[in-house]
Amino acid sequence: MNAFSAFGFVRRRFASAAGSTATGTAARGHVSAGFVAKSAVVCGVAGVAISAALPDDLDFGLGALAPKGAQAFSLIENGMHAPHFDWEHRAWNKTFDHASIRRGYQVYREICAACHSMSLVSWRTLVGVSHTEEEVKAMAAEYEYQDGPDDTGAMFMRPGKLSDRLPDAYPNEEAARAANGGAYPPDLSCIVKARHGEEDYVFALLLGYSDPPPGMSLREGLHFNRYFPGGAISMARALYDEVVEYDDGTPNNASQLAKDVTTFLSWASSPEHDERKKMGMRSIAISTLLLLLSVWYKRFKWAGIKTRQIVYKPPKVQCH
Image (cartoon, rainbow, N blue to C red; front, top):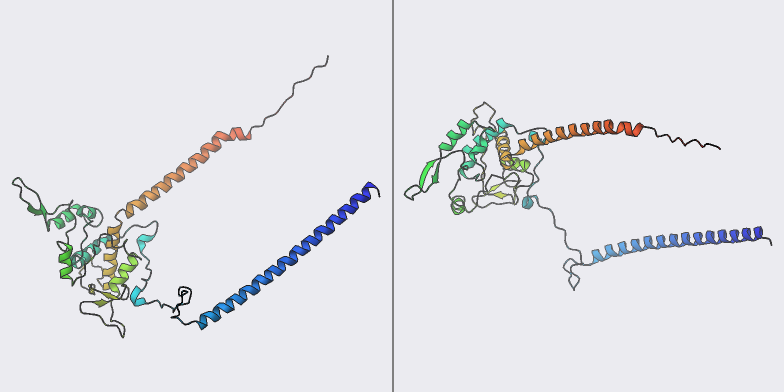
């Protein structure tokens, strides 16, 4: 046997050994996959059978592993999810409807302010948003605020000014609870951001009053609202058709009142909303301009360098 014959023999033996190894590996993989599939089916059937056989109240150290009765979701206990409404100010390029903010403040002042405070909102924030400076000064002067001490050390009352906060409905929490049957009316300064669903929830809550479903009884002083968790809310329905007379002639049905006061509360929760969007649009415009200038400068600066051609000319060899 010469060298070429010996090399061919070894190559054939190696190829046959590799083929048998691959065949054995594939066969074992097929067997393993089949075994796993059968085991999964058997375990699934056994689990279903055991779950059906064991009673729900069985507890012999494995109570946590035994299946328990299903807990149904209750809309009454958790409240209905508020539907989504197409609020114009939610668009990236839209601001608040400032006429709606003005009407919403009127609804808050005539209806909501009797029970709810807005202790984080100052009079000056209304200037240029919903009212003029003269209008806000006149509205603030209608209320008296405690100030002092004066030269004699005594406190005194003075008319309100732009730096004051909107007046509180009650002097303290205890007085608020005593006047509302133990329920404390929440502060509305950030109520939109403090509730899941934000504007959608507030709008739906204001209009979600109805008679309780059959079989549900409410104690005295509570009212049924399908969007409030538990269904029983201490606040009675306050918005009805024509309960507020708008100065600009806007239809004053209950839906319009709820929309306007929700817009006002949404602005109170995010008073920087309009400026933030304007600043964002300015930033995008400036960044785009800088990007175009950077691209132009890069092409202007590097065009001659990237397009130049370097040619190597070897020196001539002089023969002697």
